[in-house]
Image (tube, rainbow over all chains, first blue to last red; front, side, top):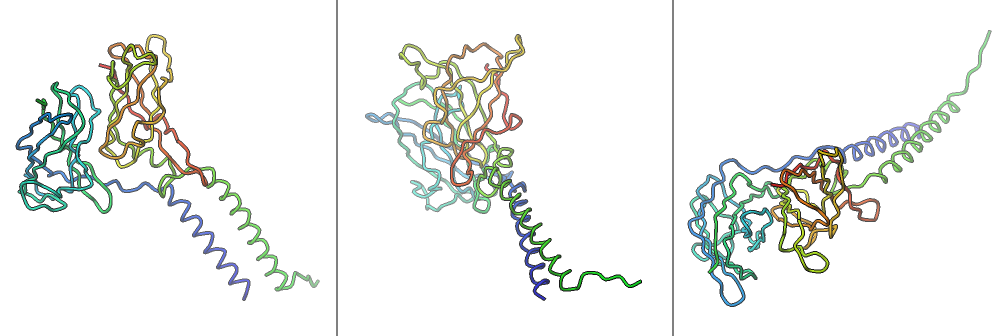
Length: 153
Length: 168
């Protein structure tokens, strides 16, 4: 009897070990952004105030899905390196033109003044890249990226 | 002729001993094997490498990169992470088609300023001693931070998980 118990226990322990080992090698499901995400940049401006630049953006969700947040970046138009000037984790809380909520529903607007430490007056590029949460993971909507030239004055 | 075999009790004991010994051997083998592989999250780091998605660009005279005596700007590599795997650093290889050689480009720092580049973020690394010519080709290979045993290690992904960029 003890023999059977031992055999079964060892078999179970071995299968558990093999399961957890193989799990490390399984490909994971990658979160992908929805196709019909569409943000529109209604207006964007940049103003230099003392030693800071203040960027004002107005965005409308013209797509079919809620957008969880955006990365608002600014940088040189000839480089992919950009400085993020908002806090993407906040989502759309603290909008200055509509009811604020964590996500931006279809038809809703988001307005925000963002300041960052730079007094560069040359022509730069503003880029707005939306993302959605799929489960607990962030899916970047690279197809819905908006870019616009911007100059601070 | 009457033949005598081992008694059922001895046979069972033998069976159990053999199974226990086999299980012990497999356990020791698997433990050694597992401790050798670095893990990122709940997967081996090699699997995470294939999920890395990023854009890269080689730029000359990057204003963030001054040489040691501050007299001129250096070249730089810009990275934009568009995937869910944080990138710790990059290895940059330069292909010289005229000589048919591959050179490892020296970086001023091994890690991006501000730490690991997470999803949606971009960063740059300054390149040392690079003389850029139009159509020069580079292979950019991501480096990930992984766990091996109790310590963190920097894992350089296989070359196939990198991307090729040309200087324009």
